[in-house]
Length: 636
Image (cartoon, rainbow, N blue to C red; front, side, top):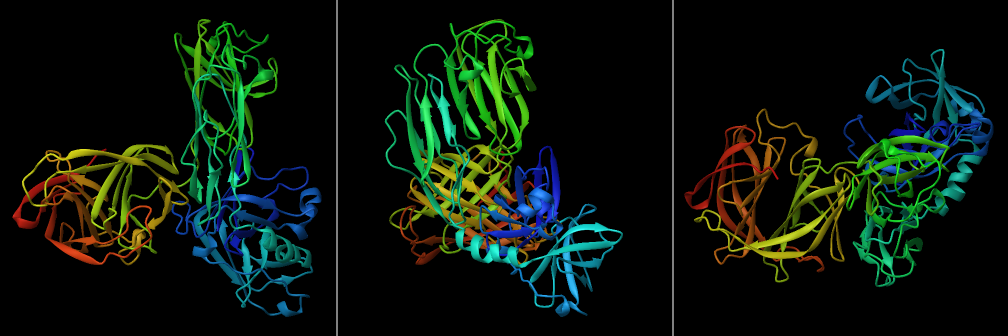
């Protein structure tokens, strides 16, 4: 697997190998810098990656482990590290057991193979041959400068060592000694909780004004979590349960009384939430800076009469007036944005590291909005004030993009519950999601959701229902909006795996493969764009089109003759790069959201459909009954 380890401002490329579904092994230097150094701040693992695509997904290193022999004196015989992942990638990528052979006799004349990543190549590189054995190492000749952590395999298929250094054409592989394997088998395996929960913050302090915080929660793939108990009436919890990865939202209204606080629990992990008393900002000085947690936070304070510290900095030249301080610790290493708005004046904002005025290091400053790279675990002091000395209501918004995979556009489903699915398209900023499912009676039902992507791993928006539009092939009639059936959220664990949450229901999803080679298959020489299509002059009917190889799958949102929402699916090969023909089928009898699974019991043919593509974004659709319409890509 490809590993990216963040040490300070430097990202190190390493190699590793899965040894259980949730544990990888690599070189010790890939998790800790050795004598006098530190552990990596941020950690990504990507099995089988070519540097751009990750066929088995990617995960965070939630726990990094090596030995004191390495951290204290860089002992090369302990240049080995274990990485516990936040999800079980090995269930998909596979894994190999580590082993130790006592003595060097069994290695005499043996042939080995090793594979890893090199700085000059984005993909994996493999070599093989014999190796010289010593008590702590295997040494082999190599023509490639492999990244540290590359595994070496013998004929038994097990991992015998991982690479540490290369010099003079020789690569050194640190063998798994008795203590390393003993720790792995007796301690690490026995103590690992596959559903261990990680919460990116343990404390959030709001000003007296209204505010909200979104806090990322991560647990093992397929494991669930919930905000336990009943929060006090002044805290609203939204999306308070989920599976694998999620982002519960905590909202507070403006406080008109005394300061208040409460501690909520997420699967046993405490999250302290407090709000300042009504009146002037209590965080006007560094010593009383409000503590903010989470990757997305909104909070507000009143600075009238609050004063300011001596030696307070002047971001963007703002030298006078009261201000407010916040202390925010970056949950991960990626781009962060701090935005400040004033009620009756123009504000300035500065971001600093340090502990007190007069001894701060400027990170970024500007009027209203600044962007900077937040480094995981680093506390930042954020100061906001009026540019011309104005005082009043100040609102601070912090957002840090969650580094991770953007969702793949196309068809998604739950293989354990075939018969319904989701078609998703993103443009990097917004998402449009269509839910192909059933109502409580098992009749077809489609709903859509459109809105901004909150982070690259998380979408949340209202789920809308329509009716009384045109039947497929019938005369056009404008559909009526029935209403929203709550919020739907999509939490991504990889580019191709996610959890859809609606109310208290969680649906695990993954990309739907319907052609040989799946989503990675080469497309035909000419093929339509994958995404949403429509006829602009006839809104209310939509076409969800994906091409894999020379296979095309189209789902159509339309309406029954009685006006009820109906959906139909057609799938098959394109007869040439510009033409698709197929039979539209509607499935019946499946389960509604929140119901136990039941397989669709019957199908109803809607008729034949043909799609004649002029180019990648324009086509003519021949519909059942002989009706012809021009369709094009829907830009949402």
